[in-house]
Length: 112
Image 1: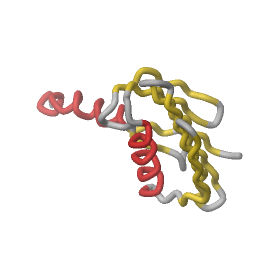
Image 2: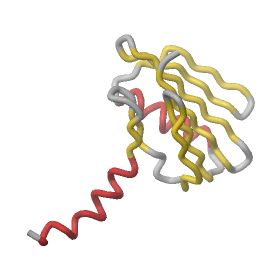
Image 3: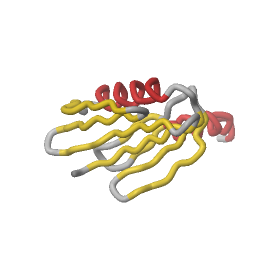
């Protein structure tokens, strides 16, 4: 029975890379950046990365959400900030990525 114990560290790492917010909303963490902070928020999550390319982080999370069946319905870029809104059936979600000089804040929320 102890033969399978070697697999536990790999399972823990794989589990830690996906963040599940609700039954319909989940996303994978950006693998090339270091997660500095991860905070649960009402109806969502804030993840702060240490990374110098915020647009790459936005593209990664945007593609991850769309791969999971979310449809992007709105997209906006302002100075140092990327925002998008998504729908999946009746569910709504928003993704916001802000560049804070080497710290990239990612907010994902479900609902209005």
